[in-house]
Amino acid sequence: MRRPQKDIQLTTYDDLLGISEPDDAGMDKVIEVPLAELFPFKNHPFHVLDDEKMDETVESIRNYGVLNPALVRPRAEGGYELVAGHRRKRACELAGRDTMPVIVRDYSDDEAVVIMVDSNIQRDNILPSEKAFAYKMKLEALKHQGVKSETGSDAETADLVGKEAGDSGRKVQRYIRLTELLPELLELVDRGKIKVSPAVSLSYLSKEEQEWVLQCVGGRAASVSGTMADQLKKHSEEGKLTELVVELILCEEKKEAGKVTLPGKVKQFFPKGYSNQQIEQVIFELLENWKNSQ
Image (cartoon, rainbow, N blue to C red; front, top):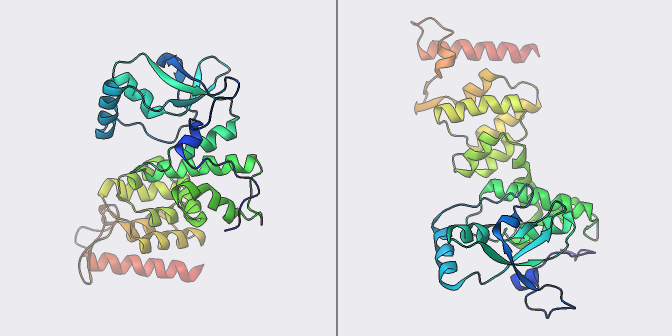
């Protein structure tokens, strides 16, 4: 990939915090700041969890203190906004500390976004939703700053976004598509109930169409394969996706070859004596007639 005309990414932790460089006229001094004066980054996309790794960080702080200072910038309202160090702040709270060492820098909004994303994106076990919103924020920040590849290609600009995590521009763009999902569907992606590739196809559906999918996937624990998601996307693009079609694609529970258990929502519209085979025949005849009439 061609080198960008302007590179604002900081590739190592020491470079990020400037610890490896000597102080310049009093700049980048480490100071202790009360935790009450430290505020989270606006729209911070990364979750801070009280998990096993947090327990390890708390124990380390109790024994050795905070080894790496957080990175912050001044707030117009007073106090400081965390750029890097949200987990350390939480660990300090759990360890019973009142202050935390920080380095103060006067970053612009876009500079702060890029550094915030790059300082977190290489963490282990990052959720798809975290990557999705982090990549979207960084891409917008780079565009605001006029950072482009030599060709000006959006794809190569996306390559710059994913550079720190080793993700290609195409992968970055696919993650950003996930931000178009309903929050409930995106949560299912985080939980592994829906894989990323099918989720990208689902992101092209309208919000109403996604609601229909959610009713099947969330309420009935139906799975969404890549083939199913592609079918839904195709029907949507053709203007032929209805709630019934979503039910037929997603909510059938296949038992044996040639046999299916139809969703209850479909069955309620037929007499009790109708067999599954009779119901299927009527539905597919109706769909075929409807398709031919278009």
